[in-house]
Length: 196
Image 1: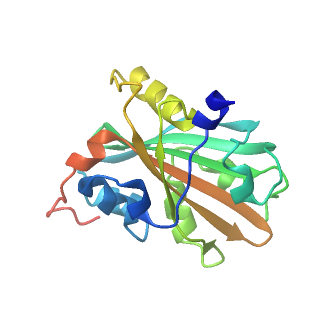
Image 2: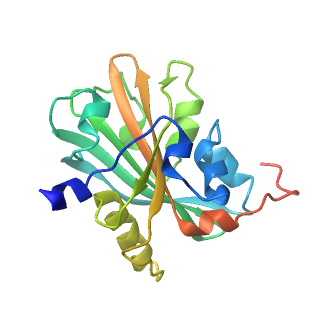
């Protein structure tokens, strides 16, 4: 039973509850589009798609999606890269009950940013941000480590990762985006000459 509890995260409505380092807290609480903010901190921004397919939603996502138990969802996972350095692992789930009119561009995103789509659509309503510390045993922490390892970057199992998530609504559909902030995001500095 203890192992199962270690695979869940406690999500909070206030960032102070996760005691994040100051350099990460400002990323966790930033409003607006994360994509736009990352672009302002990089000469080159890129979305690296890891996969997009049907999957089982995580145990701590079911309640956020309004379901009683973890069920099948459409899942998309990407690395957001600034100047080719992975800085955010993003995980998105959409219930199978959603149809093309709810999220018309989701299935055809390719390597485009989901954030640009969400913030550019006036029909999308954004819920409040929630914050968590992810232990090494949490599925998203394991997936983030595996994605970094495939890119030649080692991240110790015991390293806590800080994440935020937000539920979006469009028509009858819901979409849950979780962003796991990787250690190198804290070293980013704004590009004063960046006009994008």
